[in-house]
Image 1 (spheres, one colour):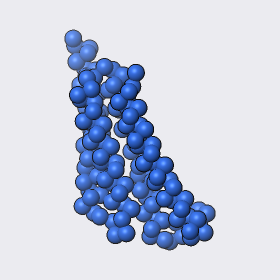
Image 2 (cartoon, one colour; image 1 turned 30 degrees about the vertical axis):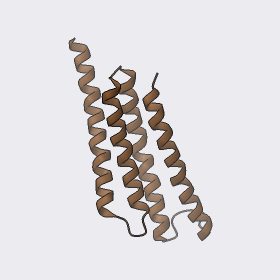
Image 3 (tube, one colour; image 1 turned 90 degrees about the vertical axis):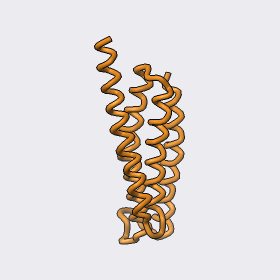
Image 4 (spheres, helix red, strand yellow; image 1 turned 90 degrees about the horizontal axis):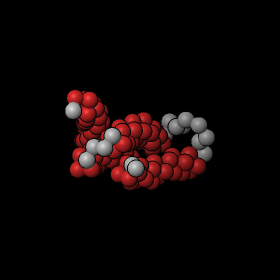
Length: 132
């Protein structure tokens, strides 16, 4: 059972829906069916949504693999938390009226480091299982 992954997937889904609604709202307000209409606020909302959609599936797959392979929850929880925090920081930074570059960088660092940690932990765990 992937209980921890399910928790993170649920949290990230709520955020994804919020990011989607941001794009929809701005499209309606500005009568823009496709593209961004050269509107900075819509560009930011689209980029935030797209970035989230690009990274979240891979993070959840890696997290689910850890959990499915029996990695202890004490390892899974902080990695999932770091990944989620990174995604949230990055999304929030992109949505500010003036994008917060420091917060965006922090979000990307958390996201990328957690993805690397998730991937490495998966590999290490599989190698250790094969050896022992």
